[in-house]
Image 1 (cartoon, one colour):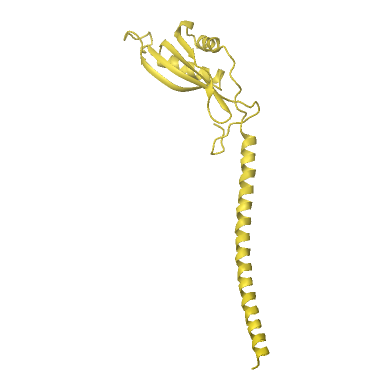
Image 2 (cartoon, rainbow, N blue to C red):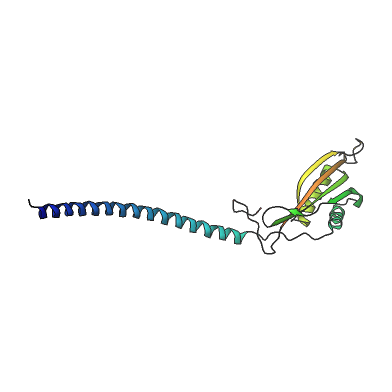
Length: 181
């Protein structure tokens, strides 16, 4: 075999190996492209679902209006309890409560109050002021151990109330699970 034939054979073999490697790389690239496309499609589907959930979430509460004491007195009166049942009310300064949120908190003391009356007051409060949530309730016996006419012990209830609201007026609260809180 002469030198030209050897060179031609070598070039042909090298070209064949090169084409084979290029084909292998192309196949790998196609597989990578298919994987990337699947991830992109899943991400787009997730983004659409997130947008749908955010649109379905109820609007975030607005900043609570002032005058918590008269609203509490009205709820007590609606349940037949005297205004003096509201032993104290201590609003706290508003504070940050997460990204785009602020919170108003207040501590109220109801005394004396029986457990059935407390349940009725909390139910009426929830109906009248749905943006306010009782985050903590501490019960202790109030004064003497004498029971009222129905046989219930008088209690002292210390209740923490909180209203979280959006800083942006048209914001919606959505949790990580996608549900409204």
